[in-house]
Length: 335
Image 1 (cartoon, rainbow, N blue to C red):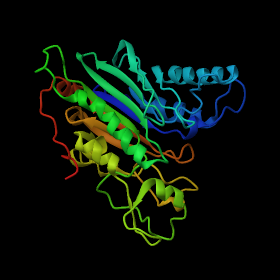
Image 2: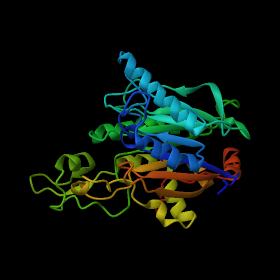
Image 3: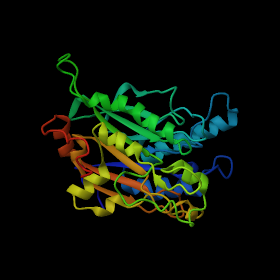
């Protein structure tokens, strides 16, 4: 089916360990081919936030063969998706993040990527884009993978990302040359969103107690203390005026399926509390109103996370970037 020319397709993809290690020299794993050629190519994505670039990036000083293999995989992704590729440095963990921007969909600055060296366990990939029809307004796009094992760090990183959200404010009263900037934060947030029914952390079926310690907070002391999900990251986003695209689709586009879980379905996850919607896209209060649809695409057998597909209306996004309608207030979609 031919893509609607009004559609801008934004994808959040957590492909488990980048599809896995290469099975042989000059070969890529089957799951990589399934995800990129079988899933992404038919979607014709304009933007892909990849949150596990495990084998598409290396650390400084890595063996030459490892670096060459990573560069080959990274280039293969760009070639397959007909996209410009960006990747952040590896952090403390084994994964890194990346972004693919389809050629011709957006305008790129000469040096579009912003780099981060501190704070983040997994540095985000931050790229500044512009829509050709509204070239004066920057769109700050971030591919983010929040720390799975450190809840306070997770919240700290969410606050750090609000430095990008701060650009959404209209600063023309300071200088007429300072246009407002849009912000799209796309990622695996490793926390449950606020407001949905809680995960039954106190059930004896939850056997992975380390995972529970990562995702939940014990609200009363002692060995019999009751656990409840941490939702601080989602609250920070809403407090700062960012909005979950899936919530917008559910409330304003009549798409309750947009809130479907994105993780917790893979084999071995049975003792971790069940399904959870941890892969989410946060857009500023103006551009989120360009959302046409959000759906969760089943990746069973390919990855341990489903893909999130956000479709924006180009016509409405043009109006949003021109600030032709007011921004949504914080928490407007969570009522």
